[in-house]
Image 1: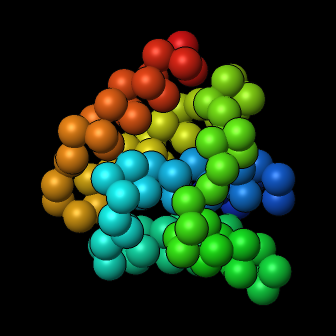
Image 2 (image 1 turned 135 degrees about the vertical axis):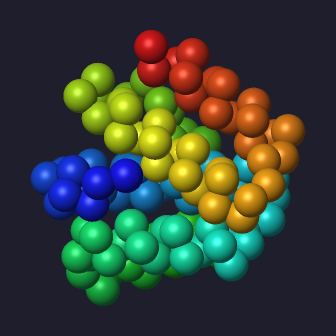
Length: 112
């Protein structure tokens, strides 16, 4: 995933992307170190302020509300980027749990 593309997102879009990534990391009910490292890399590429970084840390401690991660609200122009980020966090730990696979399929269906 290109970090250049991440820098072009607005603050709201960056936070929406990170909520999605956090929710996909939670798909198997466990946040692994590799997933945390992936999220940290995304955050560095976005140059988040301290308040936004705390919000992301909160989503890694407690999953975001499903109401806050509606894939149909992702603007069409960003859907590929969101899909890539979701796949990368799922693959970060080298294992794809059945729940993660289902989340990815659902995201693909809802963002066509």
